[in-house]
Length: 150
Image (tube, rainbow, N blue to C red; front, side, top):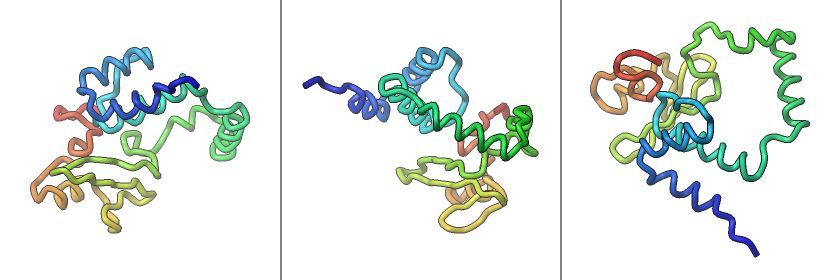
């Protein structure tokens, strides 16, 4: 019986220093890591490690996703990358942030965002509710760095 090292590697991501995570990103994706929060890096690295060892999506899954994309945009792949607000995360995305040892989860909805079951129009309002201080919501959730670049 062979030992599968992937579960241990996935568990180790939680305690790996961020600079090491970024180095792993460069190695596994052959690109610079995005400026998103640590949690995003962990989840994408975990997915990539599993994909490389266990295989990616099945060809029929890829075909189905492409078919759904064509239904959405009529086959115009350029439209797939275009959104009214390019910086806004795609509906269904879950933003994660740990604040004072409590994980905060904010789903992106069609109308804005949701936190603790309540709808919000802005991430800044959610960040303010969580921290009780003024924050740029995009910075708080790691979608922009403190200089305003995405």
